[in-house]
Length: 321
Image (cartoon, rainbow, N blue to C red):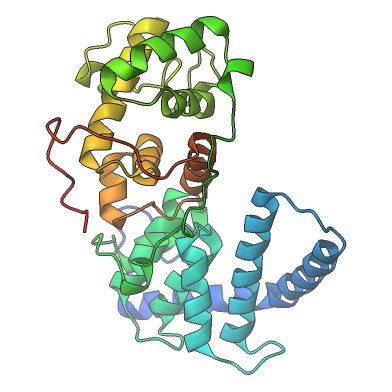
């Protein structure tokens, strides 16, 4: 494969500015062919949504993301509406904060091309990196064109990724009717010893393993609380498939996260799912669909957005305001 083939971009191949421009023009032409199809799909989706008076929360979130993305596409290209790149950028950024990989990619595309915004490889790389982290192969290829992200978060991504939490006055899940009796009793007994509410620990277990003590994820997360090997070592868990050891390790980690994020349940849940470093990088819940859905699930199950914590366990995260 030759270096000039943008689809390959072999390691060691230099990408000149002229070559970069040719790559971007080629991809823009290909994308424009699909725009009418995207808009037709959007109209069909809106019509279908109108006939469903009781969409669930996940469907509603998905509809919002799709609407934001397709409205942004329309304003970016002037399809059916006056072309407005500023509005397109704002709409894409809202979708990007909600974890829409395609919106993240399209926003990176605008910055890579200087399409209605000041051209910036650094900004393009940030958004391409976000989309690439969610598995979008086209974004992975574009990173080879614009270069690696510096990790600096653009201003438009500093807004809260999630709407203000409005949890129920009481937990929405009664784990006594769901969890195996042995697991429920273990958590109920052990959690207070680590200053963790049993409801939070049970919500994490339900989300992580569905109470399967032998669960093993593709990323090698193990046991009830899906401890990765590094976490098991960190908290002295010898056998992650032993329910008592696994719960002890998970509770120790939750106690540390609660202290580190000062009892903010959303940030604790996000860190448990995506890692505390990722939460710090984005100064909040990361813009990943999986993580945001995970956080909402935990908040609803726990029924509270704040949790008591022991400030002597660790210093607070420097990313906290």
